[in-house]
Image 1 (tube, rainbow, N blue to C red):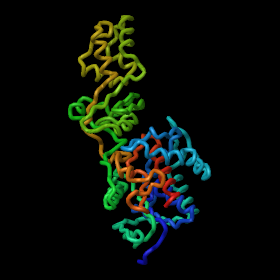
Image 2: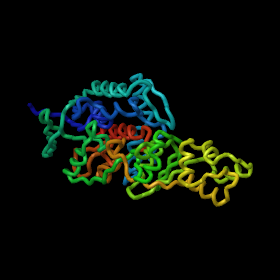
Image 3: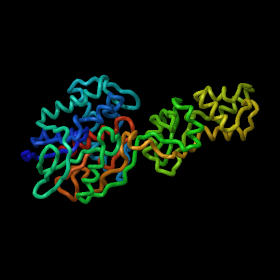
Image 4: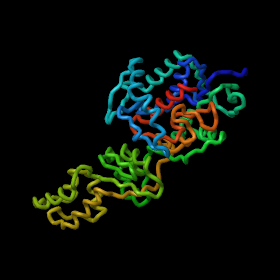
Length: 393
């Protein structure tokens, strides 16, 4: 095959890579996107239950984790949710706000793919699918050996994503390439991922699979009041996915099963009222009944609230407001929505996203050590970082 020459080669046809190529193309740069999957945007298609949670109205730097917490500020300030919404409206994609500023397509995530394809076409971007990069070298220019021939360019953008969801093609390629060129990579682990029970807790809670309730989950500086779901293997739901990004092996997660309720006062009031109802009946008015019954069984509580001592009320209240759960682990990259860690942002310009060590080499999106909260923040990071790099490649 003949060698193809362009100004910019983007490795990875996901949200960040496509946005970068589009912006480069708008500037008159000849941009080529190399995607190893048979189609672009595989992760976009499966996101948000197939409806793509494409941004969050409340995006702020505080919604992102990184070893360098200041890195994301510049790109997020230059391209915010309103900027992507302008693109959504331009292509007449119907959308709605679900909760907490999360925006979803009314129809299918395919509408986001169609939007990006149309923008690529308008900007003269060439997307080559089924194209696996085997080797990248740099001399006067970058030279990329692939199964679809050789590509040469002045600039290379690495937009290969993280390790999450390997079944749709996630690999360590971006991290390996960064190391090849002498860049440091922060350790990677699964994030926005269900947590698993140790054997004893799995025995206690496995038959509660499907039970859901609102909780506040805390770990370190993270605290999230959202839904939690019991599964056959552990805990999931938005509150748990969120706090998993703050969890490290060997650490406990604290869960308030009754957020917004002062359990000590509530139980004391029931006692003063002389309530002779079964304890699980009383607790089942504020917790899912199956969980209320199991919680009391585990603590040997059976007598009516009317006969509880102050110490018993205090102990049960503390257990409900501060359940200290020690996860055995996570469901791994197979179930993780994103990857925590990645290319060290101290190696990258926060303005241009170019490597400080290797001129012409850029990194955008999830491959970088920037991880958003659940709810459209990671897509907004993809748009913002891709847009920023696209102005300079």
